[in-house]
Image (cartoon, rainbow, N blue to C red; front, side, top):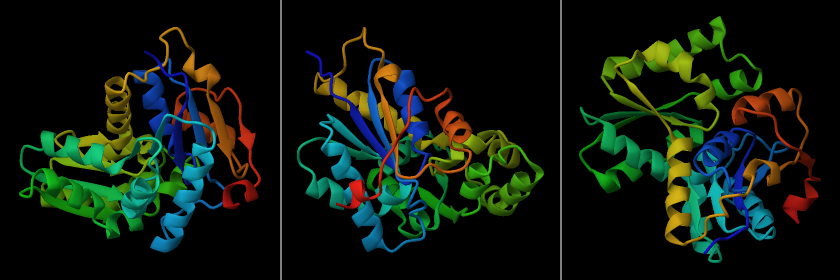
Length: 274
């Protein structure tokens, strides 16, 4: 039994394309409908009520496109409003990016000291800490907000002296604490993987939540017998929608996805807020 409907993925911007990249690597037959709310990005500095409202609007837009699974690829929405979305949406499975990454960290930390870096909202809510403590209450979790990482990625300063200095400023505390696993708790951060690893050293394992989220999606669709036919070309059939065409969009999107987008559709913001 197969299911040809798409997987719906949304983020406040383009970082969620790292989740799409992993989905297409693990499940190349799956088509994706991606929504990047670039007109209202970033979500991280907004109130919990606004984050929940934006998340539900994004989710409803994708649900109207007859998706079979909803992935909240925004760490901020996953941290603040995932429970709300799961309670509100009953028609399809809903997964976020926090719990998959948290589970992976608990399984991989030898010293039971895990670091989490993310937006201010992600760190403030202790979402990763709470998720890990549901699995192992004894794991010590250390959070660090890294608000400058996102604009550095957006500006294309992925391999620059400025980015390395910022990484040192944010991450030396994690080295001093002695964490052995570091969760990249923002979908922009995988693009800084080399800079971050170079800063913290090889003894600290970096965990990309995007990868573990894609694995969870694969497990769910397999259990539901809802995978797409193997002969499908998921990438060619996927749709990518944004609410604002931002500067350097194409090059940035290609960096996140690892290859060119087959097409891009710009939405009027009114289509999200209706």
